[in-house]
Image (cartoon, rainbow, N blue to C red; front, side):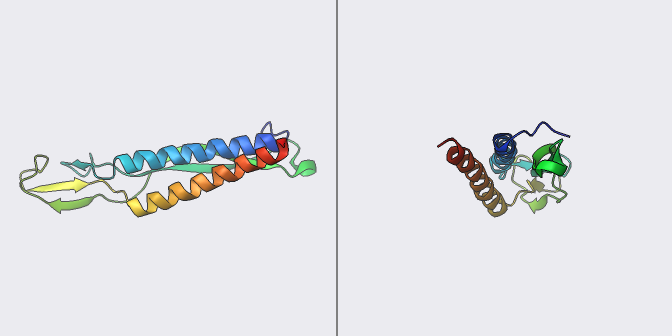
Length: 128
């Protein structure tokens, strides 16, 4: 159970979760063009795992929010590319590209920033 006493607690947790989401997107985009000499060393995109957080008095208040409980690697194989002249290529000439889809990451960033802004607007509206 959680210490969710009011809408400010709900919005703060929501904003915090979206910041974690934005940080994982930033890491993924920063590593999107990275290469490795083996499949095991190749960068894999990371994603936060969210969990619903319920107020202690859920029956009475109906208040819940979100928490980030973990950050996991996406189960997607890196792309194996034949580039025999690349300095990272192994003897047979292959490199492994990061398993990051930049289009997906840009959409994640857009969605997370909108959700963050929505929570910020809730706080601003209640304070004003």
